[in-house]
Length: 326
Image 1 (cartoon, rainbow, N blue to C red):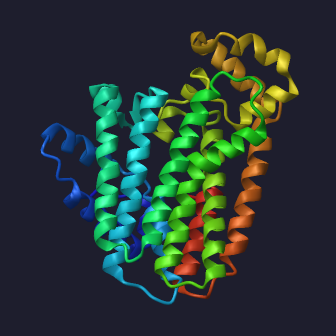
Image 2 (tube, rainbow, N blue to C red):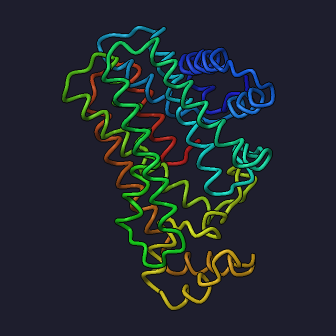
């Protein structure tokens, strides 16, 4: 299996994640050979598997641990994430994901839509067998609702040059942070944590998700497409404005307005000028400061969890991930 190299330093978690992928593979029973191949290719494309990893680690910091249950519920978390990625790519009209052509770019948006819907079904099929409480199902349904609302909000705010930092943070709270929060909260639930620890776990996941998305958005303006595995500046060209750009626009609106008014007719030269303006207006520095605030909150809460090897790994992983030391 094609595992991300970051897991080499955590062999026990790597083994768990390999088992998670195996469970997903076994539950992809769709008869359409092309659809199955498409899903399996995405599954084994070398994604980081962060959400199931955080779920497993949070469960391991608790008092109880049923490995078979944890692996299967972790699989449902990753399937939910995969479904959201496919739908996200349809909305964003993205050509690549994890360095591979997206389902929508290969077979069309209708085919991709049904593939994503199928994965939602797989998620709940796994949960129905291995979730021991209705609370687990409820966590997932609420999270799906938040993710979909985040996508709708993003669609409605395209090309909005009046987009505020507050609106952006609310948007990514639903779209990205909700699934990280679910992973940690549900891990604490199945790991037998105390009620206060469950709430803290949810906050950890939220803060990790917020920092992760902001840092991901920064990469759009600082890294190449080959490095991050997806086209850079594509969101901006399609009117999806993230934190570095939103902050920079507030500092120098006139400079950005003429360029952004071109919308999807932005040239590569225009895009490069926007990137230059973002850097000059302090957009990158501001976004990094906000990401660091969420990172500090997350690591501070993790340090308050009960002592365990899983806690040590969870802290080290969070610091590596959010400080980009991997």
